[in-house]
Amino acid sequence: MNLSRNTYLEINKNNLKQNVQKIIKKYNNYDYHIGVVKANCYGLDDENLNATQTIIEAGCNYLAVATFEEAITIRKKFEQIPILCLGHIPVEFLEETKKANIIVTVHSLQYMKEIEENAIRNLKIHLKIETGMHRLGIETEEELNKVIEIAKNQDIIIDGIYTHIYNANSKHDYDMQIEKFKEIIKNIDLAQIKVIHISASEALINYQKPDFVNGCRLGIIMYGFTNEDDLGLKSVVKLHSNIVQIHDLPKGQTVGYNGAFKAEKDTKIGVVPIGYADGIIRKNSGRYVYINDRKYRIVGNICMDMLFVEIDEKVNLYDDVLILKDNKHIEETAEYLETIPYEVLTEIGKRVYRVSN
Image (tube, rainbow, N blue to C red; front, side, top):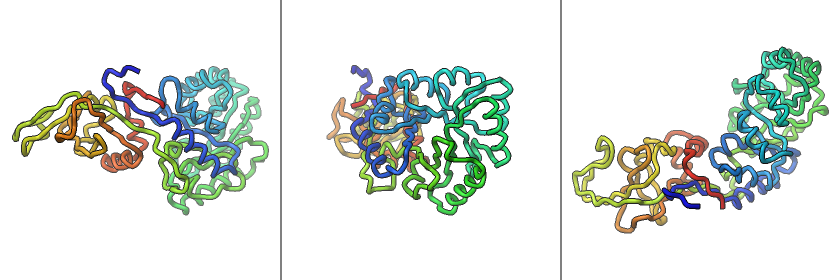
């Protein structure tokens, strides 16, 4: 591929495939391994959906997305695999959703009433139960019973039921959510429900599978982000750019907008064609990138399309610059930015090419 800026996100499909296979092998007591491929696989997928395809080939037998548009895009390429939309789909899109065989999350009695009022029938749904996250979810047993009654009247298929763990690092909070889930659904015959799923990446590795659960959701763990070292997962992502100009900056001269960096000595500066329009926000200034396996610091104000790196004589024109080298570097970057790896990845802009290998 001819990349004019030589700036691209490299996705290692082999590592991704091996990661998913290792996870499924270890947690093989689940019947459904749901690959969460929302936000273009956390910002990594290309227009050909190579990452999604790899996740399916590795063994995920169910997919989950966040939006109607994401679901439709994936359905066009993958006709058979079940796709669950975790987010809210406005009722005016539900007929198209049904035609595309997309599974809808019903998250409140009010939403179910809207479905009834619009005479929408024969949907396939998952019921989302609120257990502490207070995002989307049915909040009480009474509300759930009314939702189920409407579902029966509308010939709606309840394919699954689930909740979301909001603090997988606290066993106390986890146990409270499990008990609340069980309390709300206590009058449901789970034998009639195809998929029951609770744990996402963190909860999956931290807790044993509850007896009544048969599905789990695999998210960022697929890309090797986990505290479970025994899994032996590998990094999947590298963000590349390159040096397009080198300046010999005399002491006292400045770099970039507002002269935010001032040379305290004669300094070499490398210009790199990636900036905040590509997801490398200005707060990245001061952190390190890698060139020829050596660390170099981003300096000055990051521009929309370019940034500056303080380099030395070992760096040459057009040398590869790893803006993000591996998972450890992504985690360090997230810590520097006072955020989480999810945000670092999903911030990477659409004009950065995704290259799968």
